[in-house]
Length: 102
Image (cartoon, helix red, strand yellow):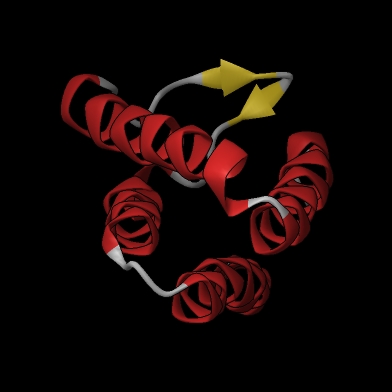
């Protein structure tokens, strides 16, 4: 079963990508905060969380953090947008992988 918040997460990250591409000055620091949040949660969280349903993405938080922080550090908006898009694609591929293996 797909976690209910996953759809919301993909939707919000898509909006973030579109907003960043159009208004990079406003969204750049939101991306930094999200990247740092993923890193903090990876370091301090555990894999027994429940957010409406059991969290399945704990093992990938470091990857998401890396991609968001990489997007923040790039000065080229187009390259940063590609990195953010790769984060969304990674999430979809990981979700498909989990569906196949579970």
